[in-house]
Length: 208
Ligand code: ATP
Ligand code: MG
Image 1 (cartoon, protein in one colour):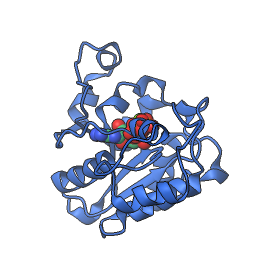
Image 2 (cartoon, rainbow, N blue to C red):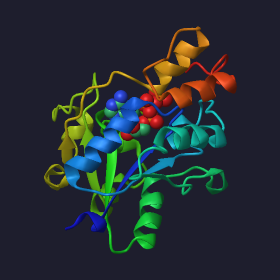
Image 3 (cartoon, protein in one colour):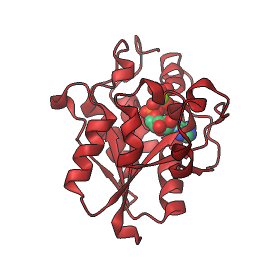
Image 4 (cartoon, rainbow, N blue to C red):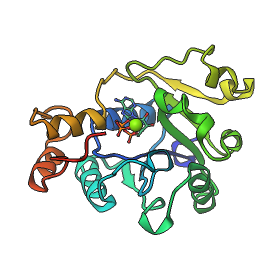
């Protein structure tokens, strides 16, 4: 299969986007020979229903600043605010319809796979796309973990595991750092850091 027949996607809250996301996307892309990665920010992530999430528009603008120097990266508004709560299964169905000739590769960190049993219709997902699980510090894919032990064997055969340079960076940590006046320089692109400062994001009440 050549690179034009493949499409990588990475979903998330991106509140804010950081180098962990960018490295995951780029390393998975190159490793699997894919020419395009679509970032899909979720306006209303189902697993963060009780948490305050920054306006989708701000998160998209930060993503735009973060990806603008990489021609292989794009942003999709498939999980934009007009859609209500967005579920990965519905998003993948829409992507598949819009790109019938492409195989979809769904990139996620190891932490995300460990919550897969909470995703809507997750058992069907593996038939719709190829899971690409990238390494993330503090999360190991130990097959005796109850969530992983429950996954059928064909999941393991279809899943790609990609080792990336381990980046102990999370949006939660970045939000906490800003709220407590600590530096976030070098954890995310400088343009995103400036955007956060200029727009007074994460200054208070966003610590989760
Ligand atoms: P939060 O702390 O708010 O949950 P996050 O840093 O985990 O933010 P998300 O937007 O939740 O970022 O993650 C989107 C996707 O990127 C998920 O699949 C997640 O596993 C992956 N990801 C995020 N940070 C990293 C990282 N440092 N290394 C590898 N994968 C990551
Ligand atoms: Mg997360």
